[in-house]
Image (cartoon, rainbow, N blue to C red; front, side):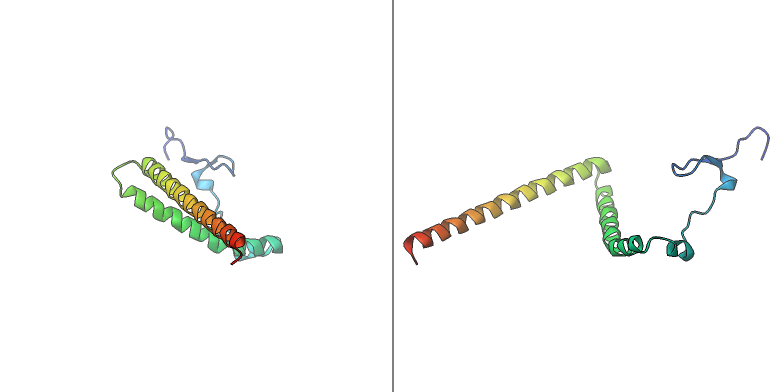
Length: 113
């Protein structure tokens, strides 16, 4: 490295600022995992598949949004609005079905059949 150039610095919020040549490996090996609280280990293993599925869904959505001509954030906002509209429509449909069932129960209880 020449005298005029400064070393590459990596900033990590969990670590202090260090020159790149001094960056540690942050991989967690099996010995470190054994030191974890067994309850936390169990909880982590139980939640792993769900978190992986959530991440896969997120990545797939990003891929879908990137196919659009719009910026990703606009495509995501449009998809969210569509999802919200579909959810409201489903909720209204369920409420209407519940009302129909209540009316049917009232009608049957009044007529005594």
